[in-house]
Image 1 (cartoon, helix red, strand yellow):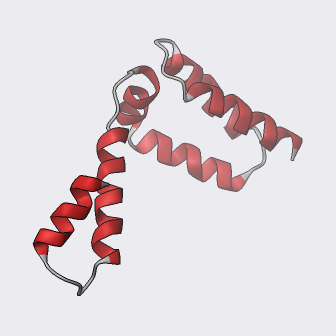
Image 2 (cartoon, one colour; image 1 turned 180 degrees about the vertical axis):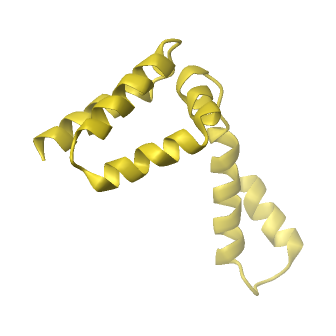
Length: 97
């Protein structure tokens, strides 16, 4: 459990975008594979499947979090209003929210 906690903490440190995170990720994957944690091995295999996207996420400061937040809020309002009123009220609630 101590090794897992250390690996989780060191991976969390990679989530702040920095130019050298790609190299740090390679080191982290090597450390994670050295431990006897099968679920973590599956996670590292998943990271390797789309390594370019993972490197971009860990090194570039760009993200679409704001857009996804608006989409989530809009879908929540739509679900709340399922079967009620019509599009004008839905539009009004979205614009006010």
